[in-house]
Image 1 (cartoon, helix red, strand yellow):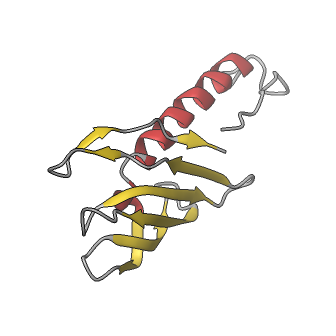
Image 2 (cartoon, rainbow, N blue to C red; image 1 turned 60 degrees about the vertical axis):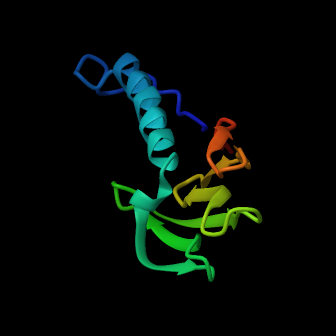
Length: 119
């Protein structure tokens, strides 16, 4: 996720100095990534599901009110499951969180979940 590089300005010697703001950027990135791990908690409005009940698309609203879009890729082997997805944050700039396809065992349990990528 692109971070801003805060510098001291007219607020330089207040609690809002560059060092603290740069630390907050790291905290914000971690919080957004955590939310992207379970995008269903961001769903707002209608959710489009396939015949087996897997969520394939939805509008999302991030906690700060920024809108976005969820798009899921359903599992071919396990109806109702989603194997990969993207969720966007339509801020400036737009950020896309992508969960690459997971690997499942014979029972459908996830055995490998690649890290979410951010672009």
